[in-house]
Length: 190
Length: 144
Image (cartoon, rainbow over all chains, first blue to last red; front, side, top):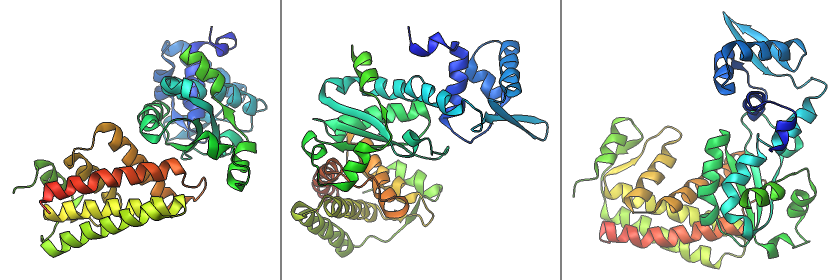
């Protein structure tokens, strides 16, 4: 069973994936209800409940109700991380990269997304280490990009380059915040 | 030789503009691309190798555009359209077109937006390989 199913229903997961996929952006209720895919009444009740408890913030634009994640919510960092580690980012990226699983030594998201400092327009910085080239990787990442609706920038390293200790930028990438994809990648490939 | 119909569509929407074909100018674009490829092969750093190969690729694009009596439109975004059009014209397959689009974005990112993370060896290898394939294909198309 997918790990997030233990805590959230599939419509709730789809709602969080949409909202957290573009941090800071607000959405119309019709769009969110469509993404959730359950009945209008159940979806509306869920949106109202999440607004009431402060997980979503609401603003009015004319007659329209606009909703976005509330980054001030007490559990926002934890919820965001849970979704990123599963349906919101790790799963789509790992699914796309699964054909290369055997040839990758490391795969992770780094930069502003991993640090929780990204905006809706930030690229997703993806680091891959392995015996692969851009011609192997690019079409697979195109597919993930389409699914995530955000640009994915790939930094691709050979194992020899990656193990080079004298490069300050590589060290910063290696030691900075990361969202690791290898466990999910092995699961997808298996 | 009439240019492919796709170029006419891009002229209509302003992504391309008409230009005068000049054999010496086309030869200069191709000669510069040759020079860029040779320099990239000897470049000691990945960023220099990548940028030389990228500029070589764009000289190939300009040569093909001028052969078809067009040039990129003046507004932003037309450069990538021109690159994609010429890549398809030179029969670059879908995987290579994907890589070329990605590397064009890398060039724009490191030039205009954000130099970190830096260009990698994989980026430079791929850009150089694409230039090495596009240049002879352009010569065949143009008959140069």
